[in-house]
Image (cartoon, rainbow, N blue to C red):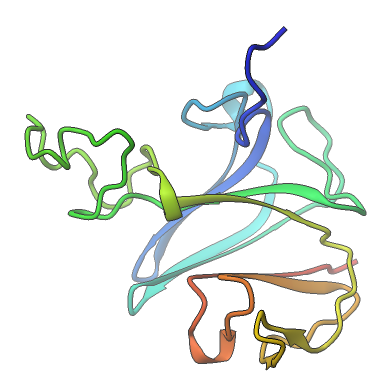
Length: 188
């Protein structure tokens, strides 16, 4: 039996995207554990994204993708009614590394000072570089979101076939006050 609880990354279907201006790379990945995710093809699956695009503007990266709701292979997960396990991360930025304990990069003792190059798939780091949440993608939230202070927060109009998640909780999407913002829409 395992000596520790499972990790948030264990057995996870992942979409990874990176963008520089209007050029982007977006692929379907899977990871069994905390190791670097591998393309689904490595595990005998296939890239099941039906469409994808990405861009970077004013320091904000936007990644859009489509995939079928019903999974047909072990490296993909079906999007189901009910709470689903969702993880997210962002890459390390030059000069803003987040390791625990501190690596040679933070201690200024690294032999390869440019280990983290832009748009390479490497370790995301700790702290606000990653997170885990639970989302019901079929939930039908109201048109108004209430922030932690009890006031209405402007956000995208939600229909029964769409939704959004933002962090920090209660941030105002229309004012650019959200560190992270995700929207989804179901097209039958």
